[in-house]
Amino acid sequence: MIKKSYIISIVVIVSFLGISATWVISKANESINELPAVIKKVPEFSMTSHIGESFNQDSLLNKISIIDFIFTSCPGPCPIMSSNMRTLYRQYRLHNDLQFISISVDPEYDTQEVLKNYADANGVNDERWKFLRADMDEVKKLSTDGFMFMSESLPAGHSVKFVLVDENGDIRQFYNGTDDGSISILRTHINLISFTDR
Amino acid sequence: MKQYFNFSLLSMVFTYLLIFIGGLVRVSGAGMGCPDWPKCFGRWIPPTSLSQLPDYIDSEKFNLVLAWVEYLNRLFGALVGLIILITFILGYIHFKKSKKVFVPITVAFFLTLLEGWVGAKLVDTVLDPITITIHLLLALVIIGLIIYSAIQAYYAIAGNFESKSSYHPHTKPVILGILICIFIEIIIGTEIRGGLDMSRKENPLIEGVILLKMLGPFKYMHTILGFTLLGLTIYLWKIVNDIKFISSSFMVNSVNFIMGLIITQIILGEALVFLEVKPLMQLFHMWFSSILVGLSVASFTFYKISMEK
Image (tube, rainbow over all chains, first blue to last red):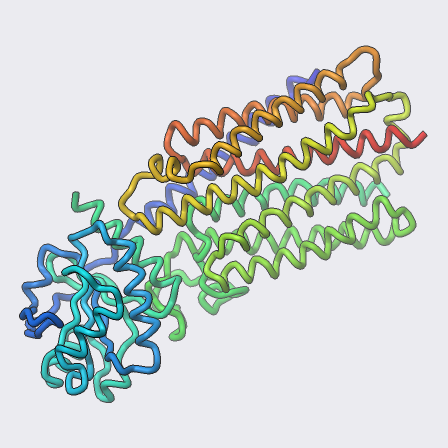
């Protein structure tokens, strides 16, 4: 039969591993469950959505918003950004407190009709994803003052970031909208805000 | 020669620790703790503050705890690689003519290099589920080879410790059956784990227990095969302890451990289903299965040696 000392050493080793692992897992959980601090408030702005509604800073209140800047005729990163946004839009289909906002940086070309078609092409069939437009000056102002992006060379030089804005209209974090790793962190943060709010 | 045996045991212990740490990375969600490889955020020592991040890496990816958990896995991996390299060199010095010792450790060494490369690919593919499974399976093959080589070396040093043994003719197929079932169980297990992650991502607001129910057939296959394994092990235990045959104490102990572990695994596995999926239990469930692989390989080797008279 197996000696007693064997059994004791096995119990000691397994307990030691178990305790260390518990500590690491709890530390990791704490660190994941730490929401990024508020960066700043989204300033006043006024835009129109692809279905003709007006949209301003107050439209961000009481909802969690994911915001990005794109233009519909963009050949570069926008298709990837919109595709990633579309995935999130689909994954959170049961979550009405979450809204997706894509702001056009090429308002001359992106008329309301063009944006409406772009929304259709992305399978948008409810209120959760809105495509906004406004005068170029207004867009630049929001992009630079609101989100601290470079805006000299719009439309081509727009940011590829997704911005997480909480229910108080406060910017929480920026994520790379073309990078799966970044988006997975965004997902964690969305879940965290929605669950802590309940 | 003794030195080789000692180092192969050291390789075994450290590889098992590494498998445990690897599982810890998985359950603590630290897989992408370092978004680059082999460096962590462009540094050999992971950064301790945001200001140390290079420009080309997005700052939201930085999480101090996760970075260090992942980096611990890499550092420990490098250490294990070094120990296996030394074992391989000692094998070359003392056992290069003994195929049964030298071939497995050689293969183990090259698979260890491959394992490092797969680890890098994991980071590249942002934790692709199939790559995660390959990463684990390779580790199990490596541990099996190390154990086989170690026991064969012991045989070469200490003489045939199985010379008095005589085993039931079913011993070999039963052990092989157990080994194959464990491998299938591990693959299904990683599928369940991966599927759980995937459906959690697709349905972010649904609880784990419900997600597990949504997985369906895979889960039942895992349970059914688990009980098949229990049946095989009970049979193995019976024929090894049958007084009509003679078993070495190595074999008896190893089969006793397999029995104990299979029962533990079934309890842990069912607990995972009924008590919500707990990371610590998941980790041990995976780790014990890797120990089962090792014990089955050991039993197989004992049997093989008993045939050499």
